[in-house]
Structures are given as structure tokens and as C-alpha cells.
Length: 102
Image (cartoon, rainbow, N blue to C red; front, side, top):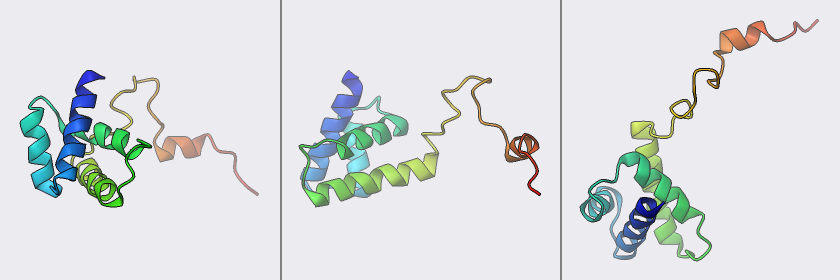
């Protein structure tokens, strides 16, 4: 949690300084060298849910960064943290379990 808070603070500080996109990402990586894209996205989501952050521009910049890295890296793939028994079924396997409609 401590690392996520540092990344969160770096995100907010950089966004408040007017940094966007790659410049904001580089700023966060400079302040938190161990931060991965995954941690940056999760800290971004934390910032988006913070009731103290009310500046629309800052929220938009953080949101854009989170979306860009989420889509680019697929860092929040739900199946990463799940064990083999918890993974969702493929659509074909799921369809086999569905009753036929008449």
C-alpha cells in the first residue's frame, strides 16, 4: 500500500504541474523507479476515486494515462490473479452449459 500511495502522490503532483501523457508517466517513473505500469494504473484508479480531488483537468489527465496503459499493456487482466479453478470458462464451454431455448 505504501508504494501505491507514493505512485498516487507522484501522479497527482505531476498532473498538478501540468504534465500529461508520456511526460506524466516519465515523471512518475523518475519519482518511483520501481513502479510498474500495473501499479501506475492502480494508483490512477485510486486517484480517480479520491473525493478530495475535484479538479476536472487533473482527473482527466490521470484517467487518460490509466486508460492508455490499461489498453496498451493489458495490466489488469482479471485472469492474472486467479487460480486455474477460478478462470472464466471460454464462451464455447459456457454455451455447452446453457439450456437450449425452444
